[in-house]
Image (cartoon, rainbow, N blue to C red; front, side, top):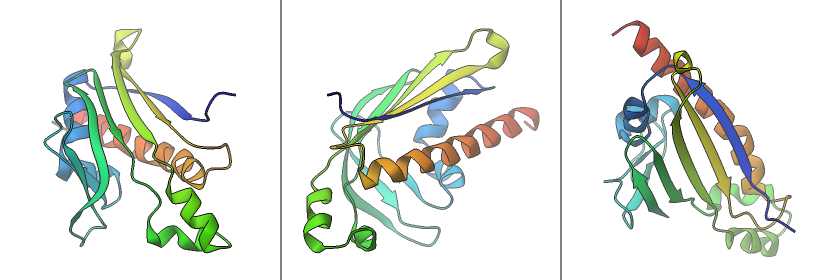
Length: 161
């Protein structure tokens, strides 16, 4: 059986270069992540740090950049479940078993067809242990909201340079 994954594509009226910049700029990312957001030097092997809320500090959640090709692809390991997720489980044993799961996220950028649509961004988040994964359930809802916000911000920027 194939491992479960989340996949989602969205068309954004922007350039591949600007989209990649938006994915890797810590300040801009906080806008579409709702005050949270990643920061890194975005070189393979580097850590991805996360700002934990609008007034928070950057923390290392164990994420690592695996690929970074400007204008084309960005990929990194995703953090495991955090202590704040404990309430999602009935027992400590279930929580600890779920914490072992290490998933990955990849952002693939390609020119849209027709070109008037800008670019096609495909997000694939995989590496989940089961279809019942709490992390899979969370990212499946979360990525759609985050990408919608990213699209809105970039397209508003394009209309109001």
